[in-house]
Each structure stands twice: as C-alpha cells, then as structure tokens.
Length: 345
Ligand code: TXA
Ligand code: MG
Image (cartoon, rainbow, N blue to C red):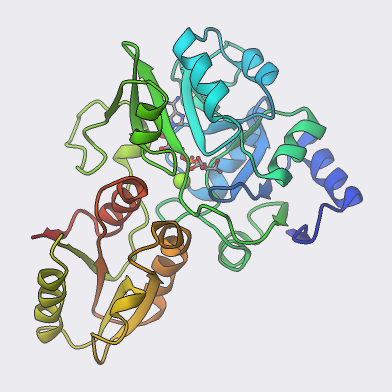
C-alpha cells in the first residue's frame, strides 16, 4: 500500500519522520525536486536500490543519480574531484545539475550499474533538501515514472502510475522546472553536456567554462555504439500513439506543414503553442504554453505528453522550438518523444 503525504503547505514533521524511518529500513519514497519527482531509496541499501529498478521496470544498465544535501556528502561518495568540478559545484549546486564523478567503492554496484562513476545531484527543492539532510542519507533516485514514460512532475500523474509500487509519496506540488537536470561530465577540462536541462551551455560559458554538447542529444544511438551516459540508449517519453514533430524557424512554414499533415489524417491531436490554438480546426489541441515562454513550455511538456494516449487519435503532432537556451533541453525531450520522427524545414 502507498501512503500519500501532502507537504504543499509545508512539511509535517511526524510524516517527514515516517519517510526518514522508511528510507532507513529500505522503503521507497517518492519526493519532489525542482526538476521532476524522484523515486528515492537509501543509496547504500542494495536491496532497496534493486526495488527501485523493479518499481520502474528500469533496464539494469541505466545507473541512478545519488542526491545529496551538501558538499560533505559529495566527498563521502566520490574518490576524486578536480578544480573545475569543484568550481562547477560551487557555482551551480544546489540546483538542477547532475555531475558525473569517480565513485568510492562503498557505493553499491547496482546504483551505478557497474560503472566506476556516479551521478551526483544536490537538489534545491526544500522538501528534497530537508529529507536528505535530516535523514543523513544519500538518496538514490531516478525520475518518478515507469521506464519509457515521461517523468512525473505532478502528483496526479505520479499517483496513478506508481500507487502500490512505492511505499510513500510526498506531494510537494507541481515541479518548478518540469524537465530533468542537466547531466554533465568534465572531460579534458571541458564540460560535456550528456543530457541538456535548465542549466544551459551558455550558463557554463558565462562562468568561464569550455562546453560541448554530446553528439547524441539530438541523434539516436546506433547499435553497439558506446555512449557516455547509458540513459541515451533507452526509449523515453514517447506516447504509444504515432507521433511526429514539426519545426521551422519560419513559423508560417511550420503551420503549413502541420496543415498538410492534418489533411491526410482524421483524428489528430496537436501539442503546440498557446498562440496556435485557434489556427488548427477539428483537432484535439493541447497547449504547452506560449512560444515566447520556454520556462512555461518546459513545465508543461511531460503532463501534455501523458494526455495523448487517452485521446484515442491516429496521430499526435508536436510543435518544436528553437534549439537555443532552454530550447535545447525541450527539443531533446520532444525528439525522443516522437521517436526521432521529425520534420525540420
Ligand atoms: O532531475 C533529475 O535528474 C531527476 C531528479 C529526480 O533528480 N532524476 C532523473 O533520473 O532524471 P533518471 O534516472 O531518470 O535519469 C538519470 C540519467 C540517466 O540518463 C542515466 O543514464 C544518467 O543520468 N546517469 C546516471 N548515472 C550516470 C553515470 N555514472 N554516468 C553517466 N550517466 C549517468
Ligand atoms: Mg528518467
């Protein structure tokens, strides 16, 4: 059975204690972060970590991020941090960043899926911070969703998907950012972005770092290709409904292309900009927010994608955004959601 705790109006101490005791005895606790919700367990408890993989149906080659509350906790988990990594942590943590670092031996192998590195993240969300700090537990947590589905960003989606698969769910309201953290690794003194997020390439440049995007951010991984981050190989976010993405820098071209697709399909849903709501007729229209507000779009995108399969349509059309700033992270998720089936004109 799953117990739901409502912390939207503040943390309730006795219930927090229940979650902390739960973590200490191997239970799974879903908790909010500023990016997306996580399914948490004590990272030092091998059996509890295994239960995360079972609850999600997660592939056993896809490592978990370990969540910490302060730098001391990082030092207890990693065997080495160089000057650049230290500087990145000082600038961006706590916040929506995961940094891949060499792991210490005592972290169970199933957390990192046998890799010699571990993903470290220090969430800024207050509930997440207090849970980690008060428990003193470094929490292993993937996003709160069944593997392959969009990450959980609100309690309704999470509860319907994970009830009876986890022990406790903490409701902290809708996640501020709505997209998972930026995952980075420092290679040859350069920041390599393995998964784009709210912290953008420009944010690193502005702070004096050299930065590089992994080549798989917008491209699929070929068979047997070795990747820096195992998550890149797996299917993500895609509705079961046939999905296509359309993007052009020229808005009129984008609209005309979508109209063309509408002509040859009867039952269609569009996940598009608020401004285009009145343009497309006889379709199920899900607004992901204003085209001028990428923050709003990133917050809504996963809940929008989750609605598609309930609509009983033949095709879902996604409107793309410009690959700039937060748009890089949004397009990375949209390209995966359409299974790389996209038209860029
Ligand atoms: O915002 C987030 O990062 C959320 C919240 C809950 O913190 N977590 C999250 O976890 O998105 P998950 O498991 O859904 O995605 C973690 C990604 C995966 O793509 C995984 O392959 C990668 O991080 N990753 C984890 N450890 C890694 C490592 N040691 N080396 C390379 N990639 C790693
Ligand atoms: Mg995930």
